Structures are given as structure tokens and as C-alpha cells.
Length: 416
Image (cartoon, rainbow, N blue to C red; front, side):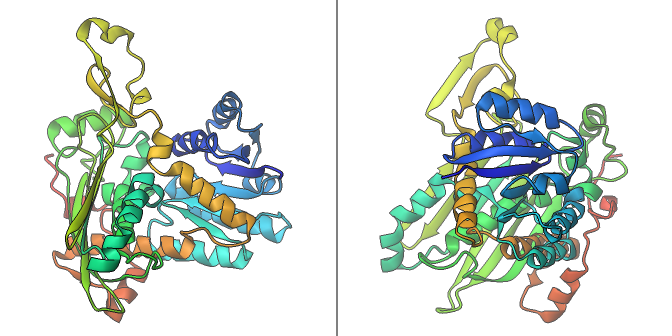
């Protein structure tokens, strides 16, 4: 069988992480990349990993002519224009077998809906990359507890969180470019995986029906005088002018359309976790059974004392978003597999070979965008948002949060 050729649009942090995941998937190669920056660096990494030539192409249309599927891994603010280029390439004859987009599908519901419509115009299968749903730990827990679910009923409460000390790139901190703050960046993960585990065994990923969203956002660390100063020095971002939230929490309520049972997914996300590094936690509670997951509970720990610290490698070789290179460090030997990147690529490639959507398609990504935007709307209004109300749905179609508009000072506390 010929290798399945992926083409990356974008060569930043997520592209490098996904390249390391491709190295663990048989029959897949990184055939090309187009990006305004770092394309040659990604090409060098591809050659180092032995996953393909990763030819550097001048634009999206040229890339699309030479690969089986394009992976839209570029920054949020450029996704829509890139998708328009992909659609144009298909109209010009590019024989693509599928389109992949990294979360979030769009910065607003309107933007996400346009991506869905553009994909429909191409007639191609789609994959929305939400890696946490593909985590082996999550799916092993659900598989192990399937008999209990059938006998005792499905999970009634899911609690998920993703936290670290803050993004790598300046544009991620800019709410007008990213689409918000930590809720837009990581809340989409936690909301999606919470919904996923609440679906009864054997049911589709969107079986449980969202009915209400209640959320709060806050600026707790990066709006202090010290935080503001550090952010300006490190990233060139001025949160005295256009702040975004570094903390978000909330609850999405769901109804089982068959039994009427109510279930809830609680989410918490922050850019203020100054401990080992990236931490994903989740637990699910049913009647008489439960599961818990914490990615910082690793089978490997290392210790680096002060005397040896000068020889330490970059802290992130041990763990994504790590903030320390000394002391007792949690080490995850295979983060791309741990976080679900490997399995989401396997799922997408298998689906595209068969001419169908992946487990999560663009329409699913639109639903997650809607839930995230409903959370912003709830935080602004200070009350729960009723997703069953037609007027609410109409509002969300044209809604852009105050934070994403650059008006975060109206809803966030900045100590300046």
C-alpha cells in the first residue's frame, strides 16, 4: 500500500508535535509543508524523524496538488483564509482525500460555520482534531467500565481540566487573533472530552444533548503588576490594553434524549499553573463506579539538583510547557501518544482511505465552538445560557465575545 501523504499548513508548535506523532503511525508520511515561517525547520525535523521528504511549497494550492490530505495547523486568525485556498485548490483539480483542522474550528460560531460550508463545497471528508477524545487512558477507562455502564447506567458527572503556565507564541495571548483567552485555547478540549465520556456506551459522540452552559472567566495571574510586566517583556503583549482571561471554569448540562437523564460536565482551565508543566486531569462518576486520570502521574521521575542544573537540557524535553529544569521532574516519555495525537492521526487516515469523515468531523467542531462561545456569553451575562432557546442560538450565530473584540477590560480585572 502506498503511504498516505499528509501536507501541513503551518510549521509552528502544533505542527512539530504532530510530526512526532506521524513518526508513530505506519503507512503515513509528511510529504509537504507551506508556512510563512519555520517551514525549513519542519522539513529538517521530518528528515530527522524519517517520516518523509516534507517538500516546502510556496502556497496552499501547490501543496494541495501534491498530497492526499491537508492539515490546517496554522494560527487561528488565518484558518478561514487558508480553508478558502484549500477549497479553491479542489475546484482547480487537487485530488485530495480529506481535510484536517486543528482545534478550534473557528474563533466564532460564524467563522466555524463558514469552514463547515467551505468543506461541504469540496465534497471531501473532514477531521476535526480534538486530541483528548483519542487519549488511550480515556478510551481504556470507558472500555473497562462498559459493563458497569450497561448495568448501572451511564456516567452522570464528568470533570476535566487542562492547565499550564501559558502559551508559547505572542499571537496566542492576543484575544483578537486567538479568539479569546484560555477558554478558547483549552476550554474547547475540556468541554469536548467531558461531553464525550458522558455519552452512553455505543452512542455517537454528540448523542447527549447540550441544554445549558454556565461559566466564569477571570484574569488572576497575568493581570497583576508582575504578570503584566513579565508578559510585556516575554511576549510583547500589553494586557493593560487588550487582556484575555487566564482562568475559566463552568458547567455544561446535557440531557439524554432517550431516558431524559441529566448529566453534567464541569471544566476548568488556566494559564497560571506554575508547577511541573502541562497537566490534564479528568474523572467520571457513575452509580457505583468511577475513573480518574492525571497526566502528571508518570511512571518516570528524574531529579536534577542545583549543582547539576547548569547542564540541564531545555525543560520541555521532559514535559510540554514545563517551567523548571531542576528539582524533582515528572517526565512523560511519549507525549504525542499520551495526549492522543497518534490515535487521532490513525483515525483520520483510516477514515480518509475509506472515503468517510473521521470520528470527529467539521460539524462536530462547529458544535464545540458553539459551546465555547456560549460559555463566553454566560460569563458576560453572569447567568446560565439556555441552549434550547432559539433566540440564544440566533444570538450565538453572530456573537463575538467582548474579550475577543479586544474589550476585555470591560469584563476582566486588570491591576493597571
